[in-house]
Image 1 (cartoon, rainbow, N blue to C red):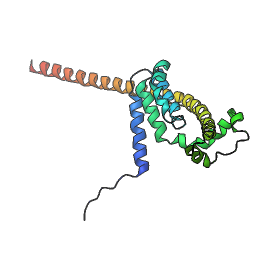
Image 2 (cartoon, one colour):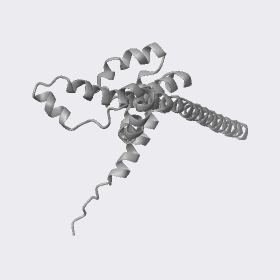
Image 3 (cartoon, one colour):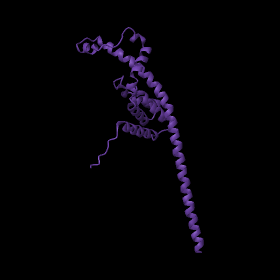
Image 4 (cartoon, rainbow, N blue to C red):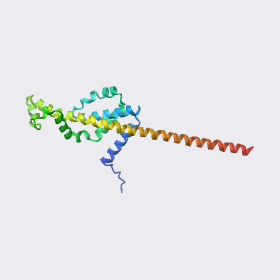
Length: 198
């Protein structure tokens, strides 16, 4: 019988990837505010990547730097946003929110026609407005959802980052105490040997 290694299922790989990114986040340089700000911006901007056809990445670095966030934490937040598939899952909700925000674009227009693309390829440039206005609703809705999720993630990450710092500090103090106790015990045993020899 051959020993075959079982391939881990997709859920296990996804869980491991999330844990790895969370550890990277907790070890990112900077204070709690800087790391939390970077993560929140990266996570929030991931919500509008699909709507902007990835053009948001042109201003990703300047936005993180101007906000005073950590760039490694922003990248981790962006990757976590991709791994959760939230931009795809929340798209119908974003379309509804966008139609509430921009009612003039969506009133009387109805659903976007499938033939809009076909008309565009035949040279009818009036179909461009129909395509853009349909995407504008989603962009507005995803921007709102990105702001809300980024705001929430700021406080979640800050809580876990501060907690991890406290745990790391406690572990260091415990190791120092153990080292001090071990060195104190070794010096006491050396003194006992010297007094017994004399």
